[in-house]
Amino acid sequence: MFDIIKLVELSNKLPCSDIEIKLAKKSSPAATINNLIKCCFKDIELVEMSYEKLKTKDASLLKDIHELVNCLHAPTSISQSMFSGTISLKCRHLRENCIDEETVKQHNQTIHENDFDDSEDDKENNGQF
Image (cartoon, rainbow, N blue to C red; front, side, top):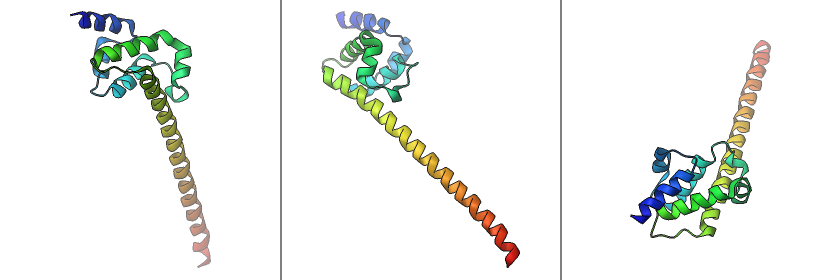
């Protein structure tokens, strides 16, 4: 019964609804951590963050999330290094995805510009042949 009380108390400390917390809970502690971070830091661009940067914004919220993840995934204990590493890795992956998306956009733009240039060349050549 104590665990349920602790779970409710910890859940109430987070800026998420009960439904959001329920949906954030996954079988993997890392997935739960990532989902709770997205849920609790909605107004922050995680692409620009790391665990340390989030900690400077709201250390007590991170502590509450860590405690909740430990409660949700008991008896598995989530170490501080695993918790912080999971958050930093998620932020790094988000940055890499943004870089990849920007590279694809630039590549597609270049292809589109080259296609356009080729079609202009074709128009010029049509008059000569």
